[in-house]
Length: 356
Ligand SMILES: *Cc1c(COP(=O)(O)O)cnc(C)c1O
Image 1 (cartoon, rainbow, N blue to C red):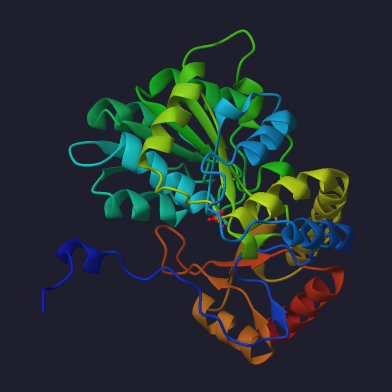
Image 2: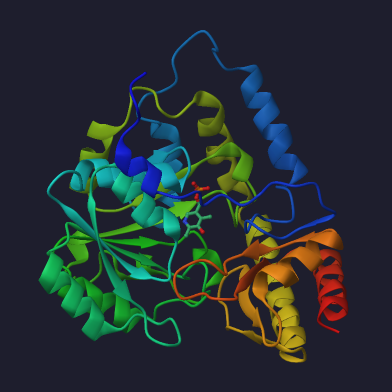
């Protein structure tokens, strides 16, 4: 038997355990489903699908609809099976052997993980004490590593804060290659790096790509659909590394029709932002340290107890959160997804009990 690549063994498991619980707040899914009218529309269109034919290889209708949402043409949109596949495509097209991707920890683990899988070297910088991007650290990393790709994540998973516009602009000025802003939680934030695209064209605007997903704000984690908005030449390069017909016809329909329910999406986001405020305020009354968040989750740390023990005690009360305590610089930390009002109340009640 041939052994798999030896470097794969170093990429330790990241996945959250999937156990049966009453309150599932561990992977930042939307607690609410998409509207019934969307499901009905999908059903109707699926009835008309030619299942014996390959799907539209370029996913043109979906990309056109996404482009209209963001006021760009379809040639500036690349869609894939979740934003993780968008990230993989970016690393296949612009990374690979002899090239480097820069990340700033603590951040979304999949950026460096997928980089390594694609044979891309990873240059790691550190965020400052409050987990904000430190521009002198960015300058150090990019001058040492000359990265082909620099990843930002705004709002940042798992810490929650968005990079302010002047920081993203400064990174565009410092980084030599593509600057990829992962906006999986973009609609929860007060601003988007999309606003830096086009316009009067500051430095690096032609090297900026923004990645979004249907998994969180659009309540469609099951559909596995994500996309990138970026310069047309970047999109063309991504199409070169995509497998033929990588995007199946069902999700092309599901994603395109979802965009007809933008107002419903925004209403769900507004509810979760309100609940985020409530949960954050409640955590402030407990023996935990919590970090302000502009996403649909909150990072926090029990003051007097070990993170994994609190995680376990919550699980015994049928509440599942994410144990981040072994992640870089997150010693003792846990992350809770903002759920429905009922789920959040159940989480807070269980936590109050656990910390007593
Ligand atoms: C959840 C998440 C994603 C989503 O990945 P999909 O493959 O689209 O489900 C991407 N980036 C970040 C930072 C996330 O937290």
